[in-house]
Length: 63
Image (cartoon, rainbow, N blue to C red; front, side, top):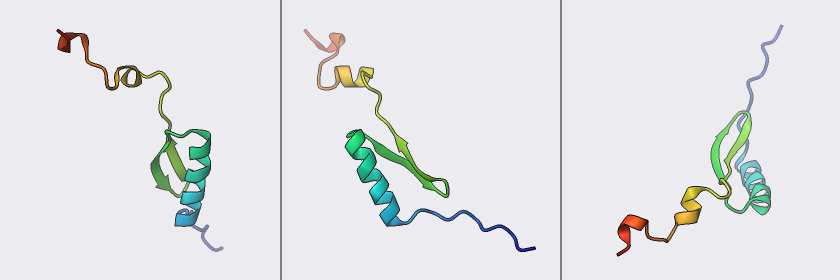
């Protein structure tokens, strides 16, 4: 009996297509990893504290 085939990695084209579609749905998305199971994305958290304070001085920094 032949051994089962190993899962294959996605091609560069498949990765780019998946990223393009995901980016249209969620503009801040990033690729977290690529493996035999496919592309894993990292989604930005809406309303995260870092978003609220980006570009603003903290209270200890203001006069």
